[in-house]
Length: 328
Image (cartoon, rainbow, N blue to C red; front, side, top):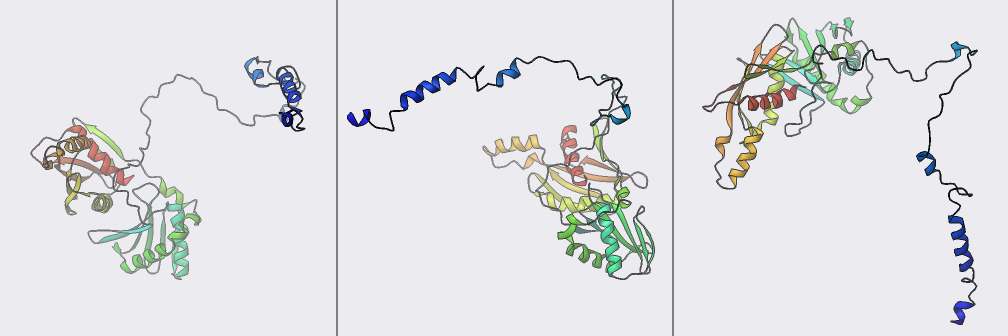
């Protein structure tokens, strides 16, 4: 007890408590002003006014806001909004350079926009010392003594297509050299320079899903051979799950695919039935994915029932949305 009363470290405790209690009352009007209450009790003040004699040429809006004619103007027609890329599929990543083939034609698909690919094509031609006869970035064309190298925007957003041709025929040796060249430069793709002129090639039209009566169809603003080759590539990679989505066959002559597809609603129902009986094979449905050429650069994709059961319009739309998502 005696130690506690005469301990020098403890004799200042009463004075400390008294000081803390006295300062607590000074939070509003004392030395420690609480500014939180200022925001609660604040009132609007008059706007800042500059003198009329000021030189108007020295003043302006630092961040101008565009004026709106009317806040309640209704658009005359629906706005064209590009749909997001579908999150369907197994999630396999696209290689930086891939080859496509159909009917003796071959080309490369580069996972980069035309503006970036064009500068790499120029480097390729220069490194191979090909005799350049004509070069046009806006048309995406380089004419050499060996043949023509042509650049186009790809079907998928941010992709490009490169062709090597002579007399309308693909040059395999040129494509092989370009494929090796782009594969070696894939690690540097993010830092590659971009051509402003070639960026105009990337103004591709949008893929549209439309309803025609009870049927759904997809309008694709591309040549039918290009669409078939791209779909064949991704369906081969993605439609591999038996009982859910499976590619059964493909026919490039008539531009058709035969698939087994189970819509998501039936897939969930099949999971519950699978707890009772293992036979849920009747949930899937055979469907033909048919491409039809409409004009030079437009293709229509349809999902046609190839089984005995009726194809529900919503199930048809779900499949078309999934498949067309591979082209966005």
